[in-house]
Structures are given as structure tokens and as C-alpha cells.
Length: 183
Ligand code: NI
Image (cartoon, helix red, strand yellow):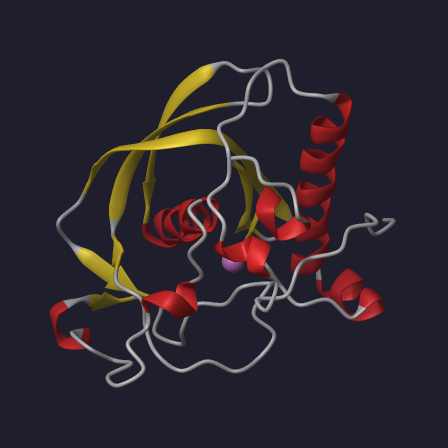
């Protein structure tokens, strides 16, 4: 596989704290190519040989803003079975409903734009229903849970200019851990 030629912005870049714009259809050829590149990059980052070959960090989600494109587009790639990947292309997402139950990633969330060790946890809804559009502008509704639900919330935050580190209380980075379920 050939690694897509993309540059992921670092958290110091102010664009990552900007609210992205709604997307209109049809998508430009450029945007379609960007989505393709983002999906391929994430997939390759999850394949050990490719990760080693290109010195990548494993990532599950990526938003257009992380490539400097301020549009409400994100992708998630989930290896649901050894060597099998499911792609999510999510454009103009709206959260329709979410569970009261909160969960968090025990080892802490990661982000391809945050290139340092972080301490702390982020409360996330265990389940959500999201309405969004696909790359053809077709509206769909999706129910997500557990790690996919966390990935969607992390990426929707990106579209609103929020990084996961913004959601960690530096004075109490493990606040309310006892009230949530660790995954
Ligand atoms: Ni991120």
C-alpha cells in the first residue's frame, strides 16, 4: 500500500480550535479524494507492517479539520475482525439522542494531532444515534456504541474546534471515574 500524502495538523495549530462549516453537495473531487486518503491512512495506521514501515501512530478517526480543511467531515475506520475494516464516512453529523450512561477509555484517548503523553479521562456517552450524510449527500441514521460511540464524539468535537485534552480537568484528570464505566 502507498501511504496517502497528507499532513496532519498538530494541536498547536489554531485551526484545530475553529468550528468547521456545514458541507454542501455534491462534494468536490478534492473532497472525495481527501475522504479516500483519510480512510486509507487510518487503515494503514492499524496494520502493523504499514505502521512500522511508515512510522505511523495507530488512529481510528480523523476529521477534515486535522488536514486543515474546515468542513464538517470525519471518518472512522474500525478493525472489527482481524484484517477486516469497516469505514464510516460522516458528513454534517447531528446527534439525535444519546445514552445517560457514560464511559471512558481507561488508558486515555489519543488523537493524531496530539503528539505527547496525556493524563486523564474524558466522559463519553456509551451509545448515540447520529444523523449524517454520506459522500453522496444521502442522509442516514446510525446507532453507535462503545468505542465507535467514543470515536464519533471525539470527531464531532473536532468539528466544533474541541480537542479531547480540552475536556480533561487538569486539576482533577480522573474526575468522576467512579461514576462511569471504563472500556
Ligand atoms: Ni482527534
